[in-house]
Image (tube, rainbow, N blue to C red):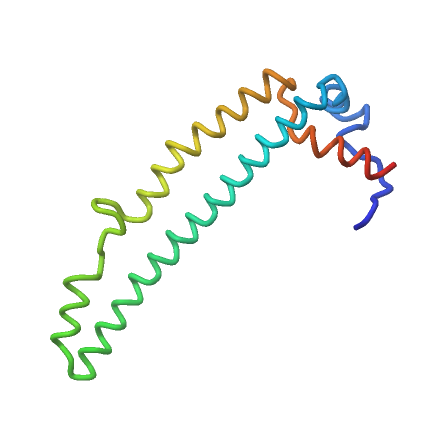
Length: 144
């Protein structure tokens, strides 16, 4: 762990909005802790979203690899198996009626969008929109 000795630009009076960001003590500890947990939950959904993109890209790549598998099956003298792969697997929906891009879009437009909106509204109402209050307090404690 390093302790950065440079001044934090967010708490510098020359920074735009520094006064509202620097005054983390106007929010009580219990509220800061609750907001920290809400922020942590949001960060977890961001990680899940990243995994969803990995799922999307990996599944798409696997589907494209099937084209080569079909060619190789035909070249190896197994046209009937190449036809099975082509007919039953290439372009198959991952969920009935859905390709992976649709799963990603529905997650983003639904759950993720609602989650980020609710987190932002709660944070604005309880902390003037400031993010990472809990972590800012932890930083102050740990760098004393």
